[in-house]
Length: 98
Image (cartoon, rainbow, N blue to C red):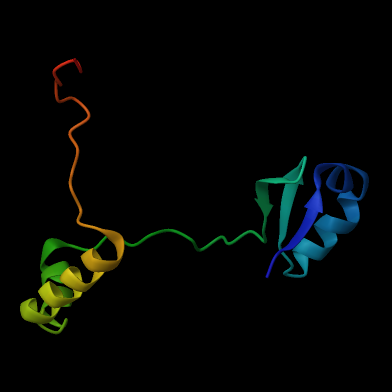
């Protein structure tokens, strides 16, 4: 878990914090109590491997089938707790209230 430090602490103790990051520690930097940045160890091998469509299809075939009846029941139960999902079109023109 990242340790939380203030921007001033990062500025004043930069060398020590960088040594700790080099040893594998992570920090969340805050300004006025609000998180603004993460200081984490560098990872040189973070390149993403792009999969081909064939590889993606093969991966999806490994997934279990969707139980549509269970999915529908779970949605209905959620709607009872949270209310129905009613999508709203932000671009829809509405008649002015009278």
